[in-house]
Figure (cartoon, rainbow, N blue to C red):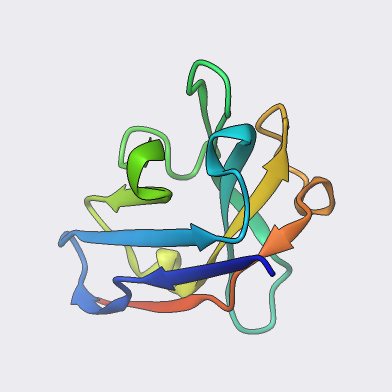
Amino acid sequence: QVHLVESGGGLVQAGESLRLSCVASGLTFSSYSMGWFRQAPGKEREFVAAITWSRSITYYAESVKGRFTISRDNAKNTVSLQMNSLKPEDTAVYYCAADFWGSGSSDVAAYEYRGQGTQVTVSS
C-alpha cells in the first residue's frame, strides 16, 4: 500500500522560510515523478512544483519561481520543498503527489497517489 506523508508545515510570518518534506512508502520511489500542490480555503487546488523521476528536472508555478525549490533524495524516498520569502498568499494546505514515470505534469489528475497534506499559514 502506498503512503505519502507530508511534514514541516506551520505558522510563520511573511518573509520567513519553511521546508516541507514528503516521505513515500510502498512504491519504487525512483520511478515516480513527484509534485507539490496546494489548496487554499475556497480556492481550487493549484500546482506548485514538480521534479521528474529521470534526471530530476524541475518545474515551478510562476507564483513561486525564484522563492521555492523542490528536491528529491531517492535513497530516503523523500521529496522536499524549500519555501523562502513566504507571502500571505502562500497560505494553503500543501500536498505531495506521485506520478509513475511522469513528466512533471502540473495537472494533479496525472498523479496516481497523493498525501493528506500539511498546513502552511503565513501571517502578514
